[in-house]
Image 1 (spheres, rainbow, N blue to C red):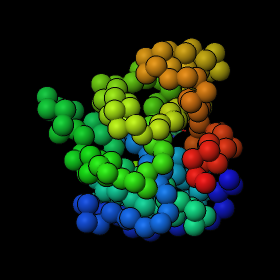
Image 2 (cartoon, rainbow, N blue to C red):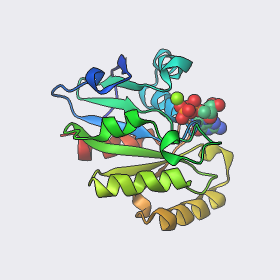
Image 3 (tube, rainbow, N blue to C red):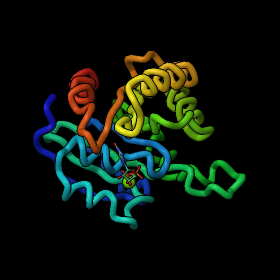
Image 4 (tube, protein in one colour):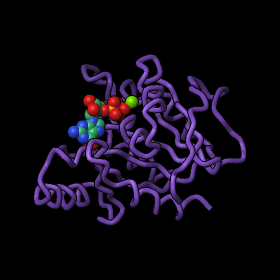
Length: 193
Ligand SMILES: Nc1nc2c(ncn2[C@@H]2O[C@H](COP(=O)(O)OP(=O)(O)O)[C@@H](O)[C@H]2O)c(=O)[nH]1
Ligand SMILES: [Mg+2]
């Protein structure tokens, strides 16, 4: 599927505001600053849209983008904000749990990981959570323009082992160099029927 037409629909702060219509949904998760907004910008090639999603007040919200009138791309709040907190649940927004709970429209979750960093405890919790809820996940490695190709191969091997993922479920991307769009588009065909 080529992404041709995208538009921002709404931001939701609680369950009652979530969208539940006939369109399937693909969610984007990851720690703050991993590159969620930049990925949306890359995929939709729409700077106005990215601006919308990076409005500071909106970062704790669930942001819905309609893509090709075929599905919603759903930008979830970044986790790991409360670094000082010993309480992990405090750094994982409850709106994330609410979004995942009984969500029949959710087809796939993109979990974003920075290609230079080992997956965090919260990332691992997210993978466990998705596995236990039988939600399909694809890993998007962000910011690959920051490392060499050989570093990238090492990083993919390491991360694949850590999270026990098949390497072809890990997609290298760069928002800056516009790398990875075709691979992500081909993944969409598998999950959006
Ligand atoms: N070099 C590089 N920087 C990136 C890339 N993607 C995001 N960034 C930078 O990383 C920072 C956080 O990105 P953002 O999309 O706002 O992350 P979010 O908090 O997950 O939405 C910003 O300064 C971006 O410019 C990338 O592919 N390459
Ligand atoms: Mg963002």
